[in-house]
Image (cartoon, rainbow, N blue to C red):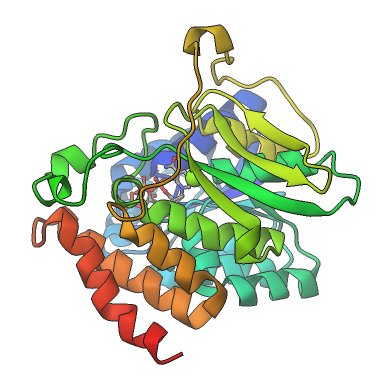
Length: 357
Ligand code: NDP
Ligand code: MG
């Protein structure tokens, strides 16, 4: 287990679950970072006593500085402050920031040689080719936190250098699995935020509902494990028990199973190569009775197909896809556009880029 972490995005879903893991295993927290939720940051500072805390929002940083003036924690502000948190000397940087905002901290952590436990998949979508090359150059290990990629990474531990034939990336299918493209014209924000198996931040929950999340994960898997697009199959598995699998040359498929609880992949990224007891509930397969698998419906969920088309086209195209998606999801969450318009906006923004390539 690492002795210490810097936790970026500490107030979010992955951030607070990372602190659960840190609490359970006595991992020191050297730095915290978030955007603006200073009430949560104050409580985290008082419990974990980090050397520094970065708040991206300048006004919020000013307020937090007053609130924690009685502690030894130095409060930094702005995106430069977040980069300083990523550069602090520690066992691992956990990057759990949402969106493209996580990219610069990913690069900053790698530049100084910090091991990176990466939840921020957008880093690898926007600049995965560049990030992986930099990590190789700096000899920095990137440990996946995303459950599917952690599963693939775990399956590869027994590979003994053998070639991977294919990776099977599982998807829950989200709250709208089984619905037609037409039926999806009337779903609401509340419907989209009700994920059947995972409790997560709003952006990734909407991405799961459109299945763009699986598209982003397809790109993430290509970059992390150096795969060709034809080496990745997406399979819908609504129970979210098989977190992903790897097929080898002889046809043997090794999968990682577990209850849908992010504390397990978070902990593995921090304890690797060790395995330690986890607060996550244990898997009782008989309670599930059946595990089911089906092909994704690319007609109802065209975002997945679009991301799969962008995946081999490199950082620039995938970055444009990511940014168009972030904008559209924010517009959907603020009530400006309907659910089906998310895809229309993203497709409209990048169709011409793909066509011209
Ligand atoms: P949340 O929305 O719950 O949390 C996002 C975190 O990022 C918050 O701490 C937020 O701070 C912080 N943040 C936002 N913008 C900035 C910024 N500019 N600078 C610094 N901090 C910022 O998201 P999740 O925890 O759900 O997801 C985080 C990442 O992990 C995403 O990339 C997601 O795709 C990935 N992931 C999440 C999973 C999950 O189960 N939740 C599973 C797999 C991957 P504040 O609270 O102040 O706004
Ligand atoms: Mg995932």
